[in-house]
Amino acid sequence: MTAKRPPRLLVKTLSVTFVSVAMLLAGVFVVVVLSVRDQVRQTVTVSLESGQRIFAAIESRRERELRAQAATLAENPTLKATIDTYAAEVRTSDESRRSLLLNTMANELDKVAARVEADALILADEHQITLAASGRLADRWPRGRPVATAGAKPVEIADGVIRAGGLPFRVVSVPLQLNDVSIATLYLATHLDQRYADDLEKLANARTAIISDGLIVASTLPSSAARSEFEAAAESRQPRGVVTLDGQSYAFRRLVRIGTTSFYALGSIDELSRAATSKAIQELGAIATVAVVLALVASFWLARMITEPIGRLSASLAHAGNVHDARVALALTGSSRELDALTETFNALMASVATAEEQMQAAYTGSIRALAAALDARDPYTAGHSERVSVLSVAIARALGLAPDAIEVIRLGALLHDIGKIGVPDEVLLKPGQLTPAEFDIIKQHPVAGARILRSVPFLISHIPIVELHHERPDGRGYPYGLRGDDIPMAARIVHVADAYDAITSRRAYRAARPASDALRELWRCAGTEFHAEVVGALATALPGVTSERGELITEHVHA
Image (cartoon, rainbow, N blue to C red; front, side):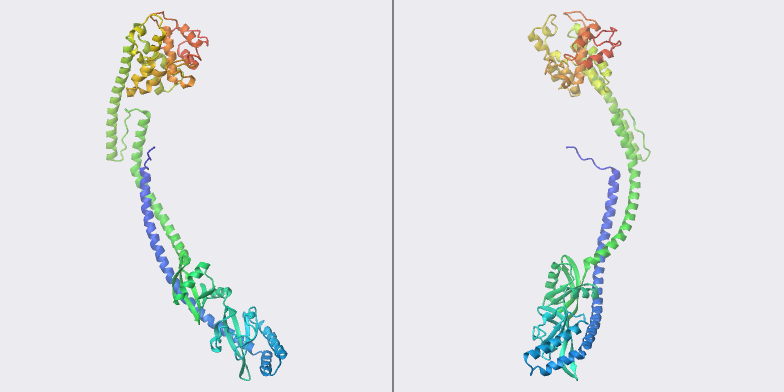
């Protein structure tokens, strides 16, 4: 697994600066948020107190207006006359007459109700028994039933909250008098429903909740969960406080309490603090942006002062590594004594490495040449064979346009291509006549033996493919593995052709040397089967003259 590269010094410097500034700003943000939240809590509390006063004043005014409206309605002469007639004849009249009087009273009440905004207009006798009811919720007061289903006394329901038909109503009452004698009571009832809660929210400028007998009957809270939680919290009967509803903090205050019914105003601390916090964060964000920009500019300038000289030195080192030339001296940056001292030390070190490398290369090449010379010394007929094969191989590689590094591997690998023959007995290696199959099998083992020898020498590892595979053929009939075509490395193909060319043009104990033209003709004849055609063509190109595809030689001289 590849090790993760560390970041650049410039990046680290900028990162440290940015993280430091970010942590500082984060601390400031936390302090600001907490401070804003506390201020919002106080603001909400003050707002609810102000809302309570406003609500009380408006409710008082609205109650007076309703009362005045009810008093005006109560002065309706037709309605009074109908009630007076009913009161005078109720005991002496039969059922049909009483029904007629009650219907007349209901019709007159309908006319009166059309001029008011109450949900119900109820007319009750002196015993608070319903005589007639009009309005959209009039059905909650059936004729002949008490006005208050809970059986409240008249004094208790004169002005307040009553329940009728299971629903809570806010009521305002006014007596109907005839000749200074009270003959009935007129009630204006307003249902404590969602519409009432919405109107209350507008008056109090806050969310509202109406709780009657411990249950919320109407509310402008945002969710059913919040309503349930506030309903449970309101059981404490506290007039004010802070409660958590649906995950948000709310300050609440009781606006008014009428019997078992309470009217509350609530303000979301979180909702208001978000707006205030958002505004504060926007302002701090602008300040933070300027601070970050200044910090980054300053840190970037400082980091560049430090990293630019190091970067130049690093680039010089990378260039020296890419060109693989240890003799290249790095120029002094002049930015600091420390970097110049480091550069001078590095130059001295690389000079020592260059010297050691030259000595090692000389020893390396000398060792290879000594091995080749030792091999050639065994057979006077093959003296110089390895050197010639190396020269020919290099010429072919250049004609093929191979890279310099590859050519260097081929040059030294060709010198060693027959190193495995060191292990072949003299009676086989130096035999002047035809080899037997068994003797040829021994000869065919020299590529494997040579590869085994080189594997024990680390700096010769790159030459093993040449030594081991230079007798492989494109048609797969070579040895030792029978490789085919492109499975054979290019370096081994080149040495194979150069080896064959030199063998044909060199004198042997069993035959005389043949002309270069014969050698090229033989190579072309076997191109595609024993030899790779492009390598044979490169050899022909490397020679001073030009040959045809038949191998007709223009010159007999081989390039050295």
